[in-house]
Image (cartoon, rainbow, N blue to C red; front, side, top):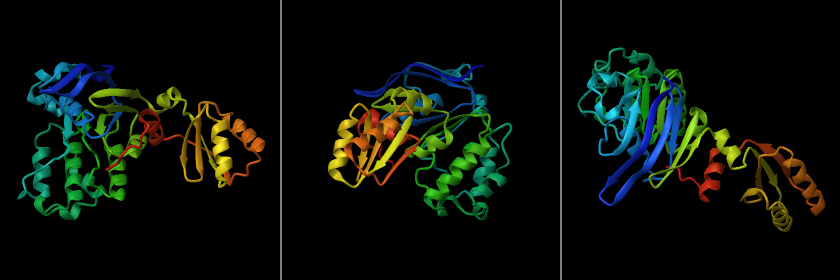
Length: 304
């Protein structure tokens, strides 16, 4: 089986509102796919359709070679989803929640090792209602992981977690999702860079781009990023004007020039010499997904 998920001409409408507008894409078995986009882009609707939760769609969704609209309960040993706003009964203890959800699956992972990774072992006897927002989010991630499903869907993976907890979550998911197909939505672009094989960029119910970051950097002529720091405002403007064939971003005294050609650095240095400009620094760095998003939409991605 080559593809874990195949989506063809998927449309979702709520009255006059179009949530998904004829989207199609495929996910190879074992790939990790990150879906990004502003609020209302259609991310959650997409993963809910893939999981079989949202059945009010037109088009075709095949998951592990089965029509997701026709699968039986046993199928969900193969697919697990962490919803954007997961909730559990307030008066259940954490260990009761984990034992309960472990009982739903044929081959669940032992949860004690996973819960230690999140440093929640001292919360096993705590009621869910007494957990912090971040701790509740971690429990929902653990519940998804212990399923040991072939396909894991994580909607808004680390929303509500502090930076250190986000990093921990990424590392735990890397460890426990090896050889699995993982689909995640996120508002944190670094999660795409650290976790994902491919990115799906959505806007207003449409897929704007789909592919590996390297493929998209190549398409948008952003394989190389050259950063020039220069304090002379006049020289900076002249430099930018002389390099107007390249995409650029400006932040204070820093100018970033993007190109698919490594020798663009030689061009930049020639321009600097011609302008008799003395930069504080000239260096080459890797492009990142923030830069890509800005070039596609001409606006900064708003993380929450």
